[in-house]
Length: 223
Image (cartoon, rainbow, N blue to C red; front, side, top):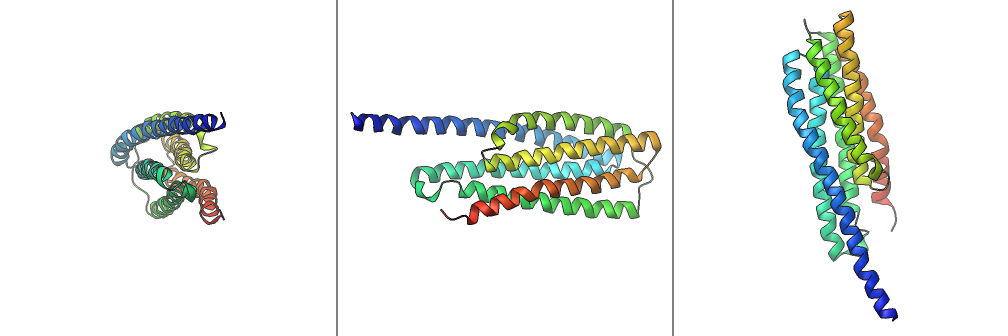
């Protein structure tokens, strides 16, 4: 009887894990499609409107696409290791991917900040604020959908948390671009585009720091 019960447990656990992994992959794929599609649109409008904030945000979205692809790859590798080497803890690949996501966020933020400082020193003659405002508003909607999709599972999965923080930083960036577009349109404050870009780069670094710390702690934690 005891042997039969253990056998039952052996079969039900993988089924639950499989269901969780399928849900995780589905969430990451939906977020990937939404973000990559909008990144292309935002890059086009950013070039057309001369908005550094939009160009910077599209670059951040492009890094998010890579981050989500990395998360999917890490999830696939971790699944292969689970079946062969369960004693390793099974999550080291996903933790490493989360760490790379965090470091990537910081690198993007530093680049955005540098571009903003240069823009403040040499401001453009004109920025088309209405296309900038419309695009940022759509971007906020896209990011809100992704936040809703990823938020629930981000609390107990470090890799999904990395993807969630990328999307959260995107939402903050979209809000910043909206405020800058309103300032340019209503008050003709051309410098607001660069100032808001600088502010958003700071937000990105703040959002990435906890992820980096948690990832390092998880990597170097004793089994």
